[in-house]
Length: 404
Image (cartoon, rainbow, N blue to C red):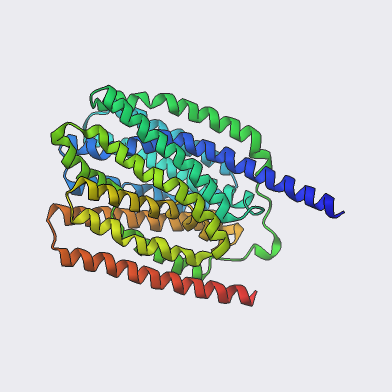
């Protein structure tokens, strides 16, 4: 009997890992397209004459994706049509290759917005499915492995785009249009994954005792902590923007996506390692990225040296790897499954608000050459308050668990 139970448990874990890997492959292909493009969009905007503020605000278009998740997460929970939301979300990535024929800021902003809206459709549904199939292997491992594969695509994308920019002598239109090919490969991977695992990821009816459970205070405190942490962290778009200012006069803009590749290269193993650490040490491990968030902001703001910007990029990659894996894993620990799509919608909206505010504020700091003391106070104050809130959420979660 014991051997039979062990075999059943091993098979269950194997099936869970299989589903996680297939979802990871889909995310990998998606990242080849849109993360590849994100490595050159800041320099493209700078090439078209945009200011740092405009670059920061367009980078903050992520806010659209995150705010929309309030609706898409709620609708995904209500309809249970998680795969429909996933298909719509990944389908809208077609907006990226269309940047190759776009003219003017208006069309560029529209296409970037559509791609971000696609992320709003797919993310809460995909994360909910991922959180459910991960129950037998641990949320930290599942989100860490998924993010690791996701970031492999985010490394391949900038590397591909860097090569295309080098080959085409910085022809942005050619580079964006070429991304239609990996987009078609993404659709193929998505259909294959759906056929293989959709029957194993049907959302079971909510158990009776969970039907009336709502999102509780620890979740909201944690979400506020992540909001402040994000507002205080400089956007990667502005790191790349400052790098492009150095490289543009030297006609070396093809190096900019390679700096973005560095960010993703650090992100990938960090996500995997931190996922295992999260399952072992719990939510308190998030103190590490909160503290690390101080450094890329200050290094970026007060240096125009390419080497320092590269160091800032590497540290930013460490933070990003934990943001996109264990930050998401913590949501599954803090919320009931019946409201998890809604929870991811709220959490990601807060994260998006943080990105938008960060882009605007740090963009203004750059444009107006703000004094050192003001920026240091801003960065330190936000991360200190965010860390205090995180510890508060941890303590409330612990008391809540003890009372169950």
